[in-house]
Length: 128
Image 1 (cartoon, helix red, strand yellow):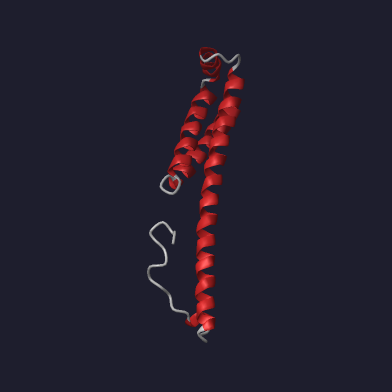
Image 2 (tube, rainbow, N blue to C red):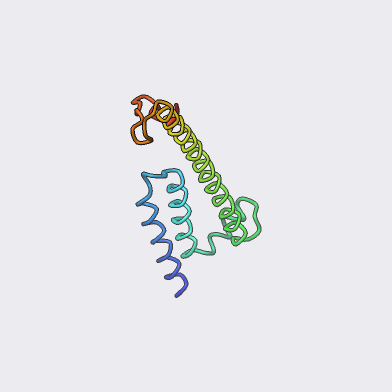
């Protein structure tokens, strides 16, 4: 019984943290929120995990929980990897543009801080 209260408190903390992040990373936050709510349900009704597992052809409720955890974790890792990859591409474009601006300024005899800053270097998505 003590474990159920501890797990419920941890899942509630995860839900509150996820709700705070919902606008920044909605897909990941929604997935985590659903998983935490489902986890809270299974904390208080563990026998239902076995019933659900049998319905979908898995032998034990513990195995079902493990499989769902692996799938959700893999999906979240994929989403985060793609996000980091996109940000790296944006950073590369920015660094390249700054280097070109500095090179033009140095060729014209201006200091690095004196370079002309074009207003239309990037579109709304950070691409040139």
